[in-house]
Length: 330
Image (cartoon, rainbow, N blue to C red; front, side, top):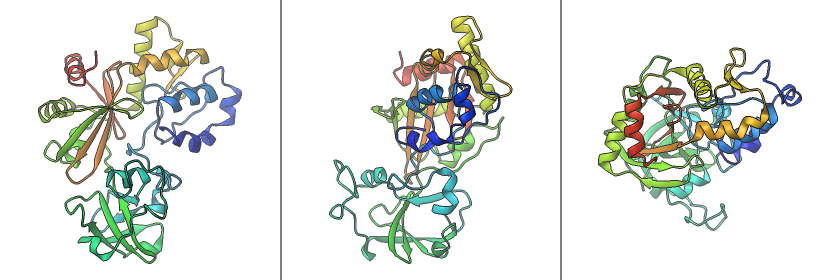
């Protein structure tokens, strides 16, 4: 969970955890929501549960799915998103304001949609036909024609749907790719046709502020380091952090709880220290491909792992050293 999503998710906190904020929870199942540094800190104060490096399992969506900022969350995808005919994996959603800026549909300095800056779609904007809506919780969209946006004829990530209410932009920012524990990161990279379709690789801070864009040679080296890695799963990833805490402080005040399924801590006052430990050197990689899809990878050098979609992947010490150099992590 990042940014404003926190306010939408705070009601997920179990009241029982609030009452037991000074002790590890007795029962917990990770929520499938996007997390972030701010959200993690606040959730700690509410629940008394330490969500380690990936303590809240992440949906395979690295971006905001909230439409114009108020729309569906991931769990509502069947109601608001659709699948294209012949495509069983990828979901298209109403375009978000951030994506409108990305595709040049509103001025880059716009702070919201107005009647004056809302892009009016006409037939001239329709590119090649992509197919029809095959599945959607909104039955009125099923069977509607879907077209490329003529301004971006080679990109599959943005499309125009001829809905009963008129033309509407939809986007598929990320691909739904699942990797079982023991599976390789290559499954995700191949789904995005990487490295072949690489358009841009950006390095961001944990709160998604841009640091720099990687040149082509370094991007190829980074992708090579990320390939062939085994998905160790959430449990193993959490255990890695528990061990990192022990290595740093020589105690079990933060430990892996078999019952909770994540790392927990014995004192809420440890939250800042724990957070600082597992986010030290953290970098977010945002990869954009030629069809317009984006793959976001969270890298945690403190525990030698990276998260990609719903998988957690381990790096060897020499790979961490090489990746740190490429990402300018001192």
